[in-house]
Image (tube, rainbow, N blue to C red; front, side):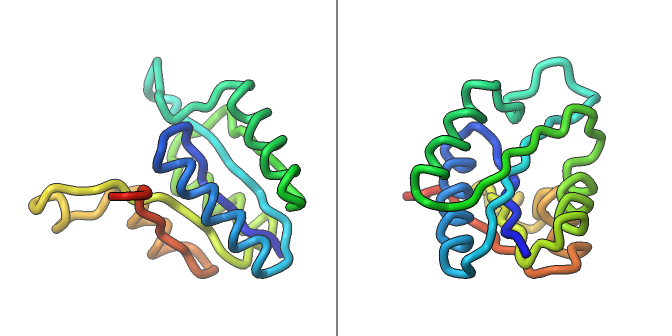
Length: 132
């Protein structure tokens, strides 16, 4: 079994990664860190660079956690990609980040997070940014 983390190179992504590391340690499972971006955008702040992903892999391994870092190059829908990756790797839990929303935005959760929460076959741990 594995703990699967949806990672983006932002403070929220770092908080999500830390929560994933804690879950992997608690469960004594491998950590799979997944990064991707949508095909329909030319520049995507969610796409981590090779240096970012190398740092993630190095830092997590130094903590004594078995880690695999996966970049999905051809992605359409992030929810589909994470759910598929979780199913392929028999994930025991998916760890995702949730952004702060305005009062109106709270009525409608982000579509990616909502789809993962509703469609994943395993539990989902939703993380908020540190200090937020």
